[in-house]
Length: 287
Length: 93
Image 1 (cartoon, rainbow over the protein chains, first blue to last red):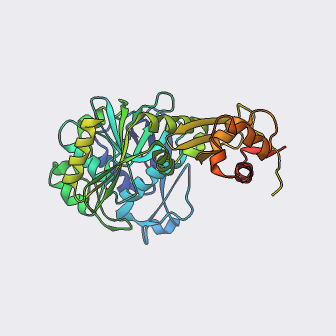
Image 2: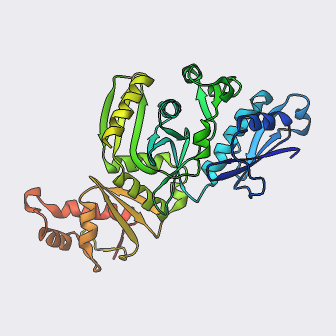
Image 3: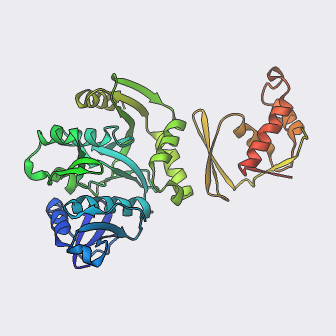
């Protein structure tokens, strides 16, 4: 690869190579404040390569690849190289990580205890985590993935740049320093996207584990509602939300049964972010 | 329905974790997770090491549970045993 960089997010050291300079420069701007250790071996390799050698000049289009390749990954036009890099980084972690149980969930921490929010795309888990991470004493652990240590059950952070989508962009942008926002990527296959660099204290604390204290399954839309969730249902939902549960075998089974037994779980519905944050704070106070 | 005999898995083959109303079972041989509800965990626990059919199982379960009021338990247990066999959690003796 002609251009290369290394980025550490939580326990994962990425090596990202590209046929073009632009996506690497965009990544380096976005991850400028993250700690760098160029000597550490890479855990995951990401490659952004030209679909055909001549396309680099004619119709620049980014294919993504790495240790794990998804054959039908979309080629994206070069201005979306940053999105391609982010998708590839997620993919390599989702498919390749074995040291921890990986949950497709956002998380924030307070006083060494973690609130974990799991839900489909559109559930608002990322926006809630991003907003909580901006105000007050919550530390953003991650907007997309949360890692659970099978040895002791602790949650570990994966604070990649937050991927704000569509309406969430304006809502969060109004509250943060513009210097922490990446370029607006309009009209991507996932709609409009803008990245938010987590607060410096969240990045500095990214290696600090937190004890899971509350599991929420948010759903954006409808009246405010809270429904306690049994251990069995939480277990089923989290096996579905884990990208490597099957690969971890009995270690994953043990980690997940422990998590749902020790952590109270609720499904919540909320009509807007303010109401969602209110519900979170209320449940947290009781947890 | 023929009252077939089945044998439970070896004691160390399954890891069984009750989770409220559900019970999660991890089968170390297939690496599969199964989620079951009552009476599956009770059947597995009662089978022990010996091969047993539904008639023998009903007799043993009756020692701990009130089967009489549930109607004829034997055909129901025979069905549950066949389902456990389909999941690979018990095998034909």
